[in-house]
Image (cartoon, rainbow, N blue to C red; front, side, top):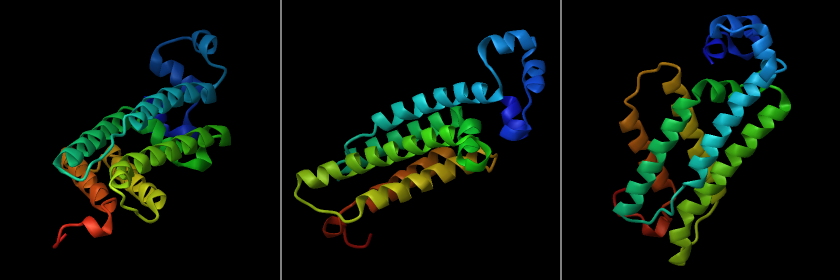
Amino acid sequence: MIEFEERGFNGVRVDDVVQRAGISHGTFYLYFSNKEDLFKALLRDALHDMEIVAGDFPIVTRDDTGRTVLRQWVRKFFKAYAAHATVIRILSSADLVPDEVYGDGLRLFFSIAEAMTTGMTAASKAAGQQQEHVELTAVACLMMLERVNYLISTEVRLPEDEMADRIADIMYAAFTPVGTRPEGR
């Protein structure tokens, strides 16, 4: 992982990986055919953890409880992203990874956006309130969430807990149906 962090996907060589890990080439090739296979294994781990986060997206009600569960989910997203930041950053550079690998990441992105759409609109739909362009709102919110995590993972010092709460509050406001927004907000 450190080699990918320091050198990027294209800069990593198997020689660098085995030297850093203190293993032989034979041991490396016992598990991986090349650096692409190693990266795919790291990506599978990242995708698995992010899929769990997507699957945990809550139903967000229009009250303090809804805001609280959304804040908890955003913090869970932050933690999962931090655990796999190098792989996710490389994945977001589509020109640096094979198309099939990028496709897996793109599918995950849209599954998270879909989970957000469902979780953020379920309570409103149950109350008979209609929102417009919810899928676009979810994509915009997810892009904001991903970019802030990208910045944090590249050593831009931001207060993570405060950023997580602010993003959750922005998401909460973005999905609040227009007719239900309190005056002054």
